[in-house]
Structures are given as structure tokens and as C-alpha cells.
Length: 68
Image 1 (tube, rainbow, N blue to C red):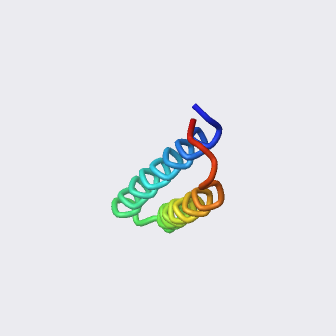
Image 2 (image 1 turned 90 degrees about the vertical axis):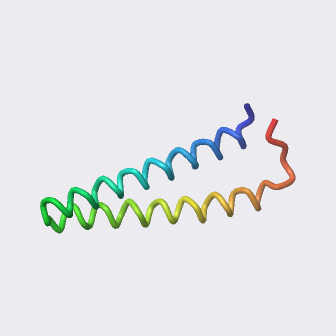
Image 3 (image 1 turned 135 degrees about the horizontal axis):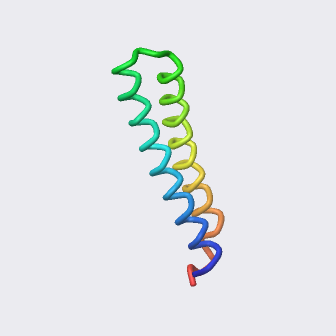
């Protein structure tokens, strides 16, 4: 596995983790009503969106390098 493929896999897993953490924080906020849980959830969703944009940037930047 090349460094490029590993990096893309790591970005994908980080995005999924951020989305899962955001959903968990949202459900925690719905049950407790704590603003800390809401802020934590929103920060996780923002991080997931940022990771998606970073993945697009990374793919465009290294489009001429093989995945092998």
C-alpha cells in the first residue's frame, strides 16, 4: 500500500470517526440538553466537513501519482 493510498484511507476513517462522534454528541445533547454536548457535536461535524474538503484537495494535488 502506497503512502497516498494510506493517507486517503486515514482521511476516510477520520471522517467517519468525526461523523460518528458528531452523531453521538447530538444524541447526548438531545437527552441531556447540555451546551457542551452541542458544541462538541458541532465541532465534530465541522471537522468532518473540513476533512472532506481536505480529501478533495489531496486527490487533486496528487492525481499524477499512482496508488500502488
